[in-house]
Amino acid sequence: MEKSIDKLGFGIIGCGRIAPKHAESITAIPDAELVAVCDIIPEKAEEFARLYNAEPYLDYKELLQRDDIDIVTIATPSGNHAEIGIAAAKAGKHVMVEKPMSMTLKEADSLIKACQENNVKLSVIHQNRYNKSIKTLRTAMESGRFGKLTHGQATVRWNRNDEYYTQAPWRGTKLQDGGVLMNQSIHNIDLLQWMMGPVESVYGYTTTALRPIEMEDVAGAVIRFKNGAIGLIEAATTIYPKNIEETLNIFGATGSVIIGGIAVNRVETWEFEDSEEEKKQIFASQENDPPTVYGFGHREIIEDMIKAVKSNTSPPLNGEEGRKALEIILAIYKSQETGLPVKLPMLDDFAG
Ligand SMILES: NC(=O)c1ccc[n+]([C@@H]2O[C@H](COP(=O)([O-])OP(=O)(O)OC[C@H]3O[C@@H](n4cnc5c(N)ncnc54)[C@H](O)[C@@H]3O)[C@@H](O)[C@H]2O)c1
Image (cartoon, rainbow, N blue to C red; front, top):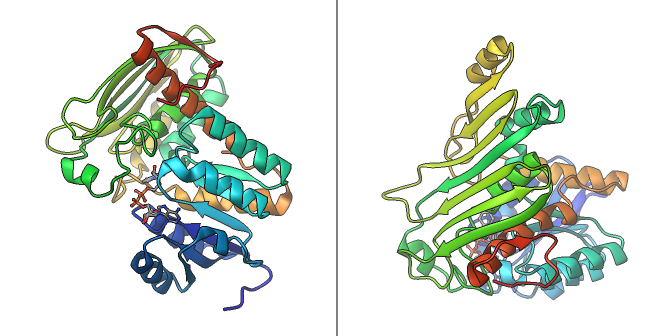
């Protein structure tokens, strides 16, 4: 099928659980067109292609040869994001990669470099930055309304049962997925650092408490931010019997905000001086809980990538931004292994 010239062509690599979020967003955006999809499992590629009216591929290298693809979305297991992203950059395609962008800093840096060298854009999917609640918080933060930041906390209390982990062999593995920090909590850790600023050091513990996996299903960590504030991370996929919350707490001398819901989507506390009217408005116009923890943000992050490509600017969630949460998580893994706090930037690449 022919792509119209005013539209940017998309290819999706990996047709699993998260891929429909991308496909639905791309097909709803007027200046985007999904032209091809790829999965190593033929039935998945064919069924997905049929659903979204695209061409199926079994080998991503063949998909990358198409001239009508401008942007490639990588939604495969996390361990091969960097390899596929680098191949896409070398083929001259702009890259949107699902989180985590890679499993190591070395791979993340290679991906960032490949995109720079081939003059293509790179965007990492942290769609929760686009939640209405988070955008409101970010505006308050940028306006300095918190005063001196004192502390913040990122909590993920979710349930991923044994069936979730055994549905695909890559889940919970060291090389392909990581545990609750790298897979589920990375979005909230990204938000915590986005609000609180650069990290000085990290200390943490991880454990595999209940699930049949190689990596952690429960973790706790403490962060010292460069501005002196403290950060706390609590992450678990062991919560009985179902998801309770993904919550971000930010506290400063003149502000307290708690954003909860199942996926940081509801403002629960909003306290600033003279904020009664604003608070009423915020509470009256809350987003409902999304149908899944994936939320509503994929469309906007894709739209921002399209704008970046068209205007030759950097997408807001570029490779350097996506790397920040990855580094914090790898520092927690290193701290668990060494029993010591880990200073950032990490000089060696600790792969977990
Ligand atoms: N942004 C989010 O909120 C969010 C949510 C879920 C998953 N994710 C991320 O998306 C990625 C995929 O997760 P998922 O839950 O959809 O996994 P999944 O196992 O459901 O799907 C992955 C698909 O990739 C295919 N695949 C594997 N290797 C491939 C290759 N070399 N070429 C083409 N296809 C290949 C598999 O056959 C499978 O169909 C992971 O990195 C995960 O962390 C992000």
